[in-house]
Image (cartoon, rainbow, N blue to C red; front, side):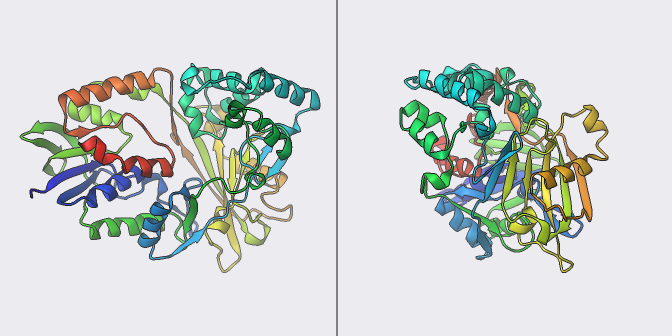
Length: 450
């Protein structure tokens, strides 16, 4: 039987999952092609003063056991289970064991208004297709009182008005559910209707086991980079041909397949799987114009690593900060959960600070680490005795890309033209966000190929 050749365009986690699936098919030849020289892209940890620092909170969080088995195999068993110990802060009140906004710090009158507005909606049958934008999502799901608060939080964290963003973007945030009372009261409200059950939240420990997903992390003291390096070798052993550091110049139809011209030559394949979110490159390569990227809001941040004695760092996973006057959106005890403590006793925390590109704070951020250090102390991420021994600051113009109003219309039009003019390019209309979703979507790649 003739081998079927596939090019996987990309080298991020989605490309890895696609290559994983394709290399498991009989009589297949798989080429991973990307201009990046590394697998993993944003997952590839940086070196900061001798520490391997992830670019945010990156781990294999709530993944199916089948994917966990693959990760464990790649790491040759060198993984640790992550027992999430999360917190959140709103109005400077901490909620332990909960990473979404908890509005319990509001005064009783406001909480009563939220409750009454929710009960008026309890028989609603709204779904995501019912909403025009994120603002509409918040108001219609949470009521006007809580909805306005969530709109303020959204603007603060993502640097854009919620009425400009497609409602599907909420799935990329920590704003998809509402909590404003104690757990028992929240559960009582959730039990009053299926709509309220889908809208409201209580702490996980109060609800018992919810799913069978697992969370793991590499234990080789290299951060997520440890997985990226080993995944590269693992794919090669599976027969995947890695052509990294190679840039796609053009893609054209060829007899029974495709011709891909790169800066290093020509590659012929039966099919090409577009596993990258670089739509501009695809558009240029196949000469089908699109302005999809103008319909994506790029969320920027300043990422700070703070180094101090490990004994002064709180032993937890992360804290989501929803205080409207805060600097840091998320503090993580990344040095502790990645088992990185030097002989001198130092470890580190990571701090994700949403800052708009070109703003005054973006242009004048030299002292931002000092403000964030004070904030870490005020929120108990580090103890009051802690001393800042070193730090690192980088500006990240793009972290996540949020779909704006009109994005999906343009995406679908682009996908339809590709399907018509390049039937051997597999370009999927859905864009999964979490690693669990990415992996599960790749398992359906066979349906797209057929």
